[in-house]
Each structure stands twice: as C-alpha cells, then as structure tokens.
Length: 138
Length: 405
Image (cartoon, rainbow over all chains, first blue to last red; front, top):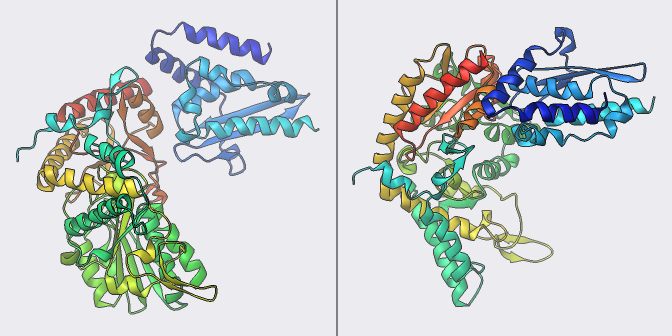
C-alpha cells in the first residue's frame, strides 16, 4: 500500500472514535504492539533527546526499502511512533521524501508533534526524512 | 483583610478559558503566574496614554513615563526592603540578572578562586557560572543534595574556604519547592568573605523577603512569576558591589560620557540598563507588586500552605505515587511520579482534562540524575487555585493511571 493509502486508512480508523479517551486507548494498544527494540540499539547513535521523553530511532536499508525500528520511554509517544512506522516503514526513500505528515493533524494528534512538547517526535520525523534523503543517494 | 479566593479569581480573565472543553485548571504557576486584569490594563494604559521613551525627553509624555518607570523601582525597593533605590536594576528576568553578575565577576576572579553552586539549581543558575569559570579558570564546586532533595549543609561547610569568592543558591527549588536555608548559607559564606547570589525566581511570589535583614549580596526575581508580564525582572545588588562590577551590555542610557577613545559609565542603576528598557513591562511589574500586596503576602502564604498540605495528603493516597522533595520546609510545588508510568504520559492526559501541569526535567537535569528519573510531573500552586481543583486533579490522575497501566 502507498503511504497516501495508509494515511487515509488511519484517518478513517480515527474517525470512528467518539472522544479522546477512545483515541488514547487505541494509541496505548498500538504502543504495546510496536516491535521491540534491543537494548544495544538504544545507543547514543540512535537517541533523539527531548526534554520530555527520549526517543530512539534505528534505520536499515535493504532491497531499496528502509526498515525503521523506534521506541520511547513514554507510552503515548510510543503509540504515535507506532502510527508513524505503520506509514513509513518498509517504504522507498523517494516515497518517504515525497510524503507529508498532515494526516497527524487530521487524526487529531497534532499537539504531540509540536516542537514545544519536546518529546522527540518532531525530531524523529525530521530524522526519518534525513535517512530517506541519505539512502536515496545510494 | 479576608482572603476570598472566589473574588480573587474574578481578577484573572484567563480563568474563564476552557481547555479541551473543560474549565482551565492552572497548576503551572512556577513557570508563569497568571495575570490579573489591573496588570493587563496598565500595559494598554501605557500605550494608550503615555507611550514614550524614558530618561531623555524634555516633553511631558516622557516625563510621565519616566515617573511611572522610576515609581516601579521605588515600589520594588520598598517591597523587598533594599537600602537604596539604585540597588534595583531592571532586567529581562532572572536569567539576565544572573548573567550581569557572572559577567561582572569575570575579570575579578582568577585561577585559585572557587565558586560554589547548589545541587538544586535551575540551569540558568548553573550555565552562566560554568561559562564564566571556563574563561577565568575559577573552580566550580557543588553542594550535594540528600535523598529527600535537601542541601547537605555540612558538605557546604566543608567545601567553603577562603578561596571561595561566590556562592549561588536558589531560595526555593523550582523542581521540588524546597525552601533552602539561605540565612545560614549567607552567614557562613560571609564568614569566609564570599559573596552570595540568591535566585529568588520561585520564592518572591510566595512570601515576603527582606534584603537588608537577609544581608544578601545579590538577589534576582522575574515579574512573570509575580502576576506581572513576561520579559521583565530585576537584579538587586548591594550598592558598593554593583559599583565594583562592569556592565556587559553597552549602549545608550548606560553612559555619562562618550568619545571614540573612552566611555564613562552612568551611575547606578542606569549603568546596567543599556538601551530602551521594557518600559510598559516594568510599570506593570509595579502594578503587580501592588496587587499582591493588596491581597497581602501573609494571606497568600497562609492560603498556599493550606493548599499544599491538602494536595500533598490527597495525592499521597494514590497507589504508587512518589513525591520528590517531600520535606517540611517547602512551598507551593509537588513534583511526583507514578510507578511504571512516564511523566509525559500523565501530563498529556491531564491536559485533556483541562489541567495544566509541567512535565519533564524542569531545566534541572542534575536533580533528575540524582534521583535517576527521566523527569517528574510538577504541580505548582498559587493563591488563585482552589481546593476543588485539587480534587479534580486527584480524580484525573486516577483516570490517567488506569488508562496507562
């Protein structure tokens, strides 16, 4: 599925929720399903420091696609990471470079991506794009 | 005067605001206090009626603005009982104030000199001194804290010596709310001939402070934590000490004589107030001090102590909740974590209930490292908060806990 389709699906999923509690409960569920990141991968090389919570992001490039692994100390941040990886994982660098993330606003989670929250997510998205740019030159 | 929180809350327009459909409950007073209407009005009154530059016009408007601006200095001098009006330097806030002192002492300290900082400091009372020490090779020593978060005074007495030139400590910890024993610290420091700077960013809003009684050398505070506007604060320094240090910002207003060969600085306080200051902000700061004095600092302190005790005993009923800095001598701040839950998650969910708290490291990474935690949830109270709001906070934390566990 394309990034665009995945984003549309998520927007539709989130439209079913009647209030924020259902939305947050869903994100907490998603965070539990996030692929585990090994402790040694949570290295200084992969850390994205936020004043609020730390995020780790690791990228591997094979067969023309980027595989991301990511984690956070905070469960809501993990939930958003899970959503971001649903969209960006196993995609080609070009697909990632050309995508936008306005779907986050449409599913009502914009506040978590504000640099003011300093939770590492804002920098994580930038980092995902940087990886895509770097691998597109391979 | 009777303290009536219901009436007081009517003075704060922002309290009518809804957040996520819920009435705003503002527990982030330690970061920025809310602003009463009289303070907001004083700013628009300045721009509507006498906006002009101070200290230099011959015209009436400028005279009016200067009078109000200097009137604010007088109010602050009186409120904090400084000996001289010119000991009050207006700045952009506590951080600016601290930087005036750290830069002022840059050339007065050398290799063998030592400076002492407390382990409870905000980054703003650490970084300027590190920057200074890097340049003049002075040695920076740290007063450690114990398991409750209190300063180890015995260690301070061991660290201090005749080599110590400066000691800087906050009056109240922004992260834990602990009131530090600054009287004793000042007495001990003075015995060794060291000067003391007290960062009063978190104390000035909660109880009355008397500079002459404290015999403090430098003291700083910010208006935005005292019902005043952002971007304004002051540095207090004993006159003979302020005369001894050079300003680090040059410009207009701070000079008495300028040629291309040399500049003679103006007298205090103008030497440290280069450029056009935040005139409306300074005037509004004076109005804010008047407002708080009208309510009465004794009333404020008594009410806030009651709130703190209530919140403290109520929150302790929550399973797995740990309060950091749970000591007797504290004011208005509860910093906590809940076992197994990240503070960011609690803060995000409380926001959904309209409750504003601060989460994270609170610009005090050394304290977080001491407790080996990524951050805390900080509830910081003020006299505009109510006991009912604490009940709502309690219920919201319980809901957040059940969602997140």
